[in-house]
Image 1: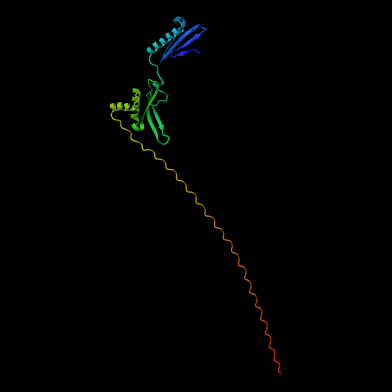
Image 2 (image 1 turned 90 degrees about the vertical axis):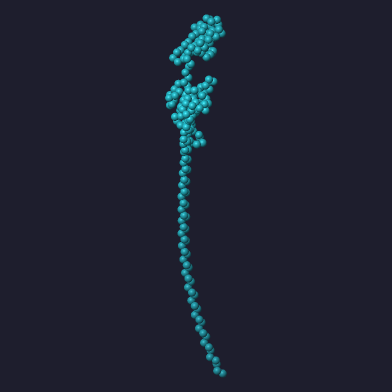
Length: 217
């Protein structure tokens, strides 16, 4: 696999008898390229040294390359490069959202920086202006941005706090339907009274025995 360095790469082609280094650079609309041959410059190592020098010379002559952070993205709604609008939400409070403007850039160490300015705290206009100032100056310290802003525009007025949305009252539980009273059991039909037994017919008194007449002596 051909060896590649930043700005120049190795070329070894036996078909074309081409052995050397190809230097290339692009800045904006301008493109440059040059082939540094081993045979012309005394070998592989010496030609590589020349290729590196050519590339560094071109870098010094041409303007710095544009990065994606220096271009206005299609989704950017603020109209300012490096400043975008952001919504955040705390999962603990579903109805509470935090709105801010964010300044973004890549610092000299290649690290991406994001500095937020709360719309809830400073208001929409001030938060946007703070983010724009922060991006233009590329200041990492939020307090330094605020101090610089206040020096020019006067003391920042904090936005009035919005009352936290009231939690919706939980719907009242519907009262359980009353249980229907158990149907009264029908009274068992009264037993018919047993017919009274007829009183036993009174026995006729036995006829009294007639007294026998005493015999006369």
